[in-house]
Image 1: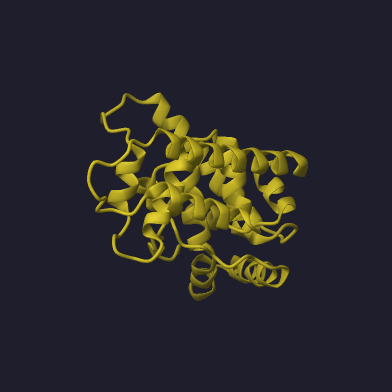
Image 2 (image 1 turned 90 degrees about the horizontal axis):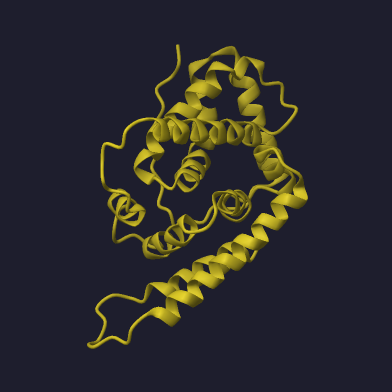
Length: 230
């Protein structure tokens, strides 16, 4: 029986610890151990990678409201094929490859059906889906706004390497392209994000009264630079 998947929505601004060979090896061992269908082993595997998958599909789809459902779909697909996983790549890379295909399938399905809602404001969706008043919330929303404005291929490469912390080689394997292409996309994403921040500061009108809210552009710049520093 497939275990219940715990929904653990994440704040967009959270910054995870960068993955190491040891941590990836540990997760891969969890995946291999879970191939026998044992509920407790499967639950440990799901919990170990749930946060990374949620963050990846949320940024890649640019739809945090759909992230919980997409994450569920990813793990349902993964668990159905877990018996075929042999550990030739890390379980994290294998799972993120499944996540990528899940998002692509979802976007294709959405494009093929009639639009049921006029709301297409990603910022509003992200802000509604995230809890206010937590450290890093404004930075996360600001960064998410900027990422939603750049081409999807650049956004994906940036999220995999700079936010999820995958090595470039593993990101290339997850995406299915040469490592040099991933490096190029990350560099272009960083350039695009900085350019967007510059445009935001230049285009912003002078306030007529003392601002009640913190300026988003400086906070976003800090978030981009922090994500790009590794």
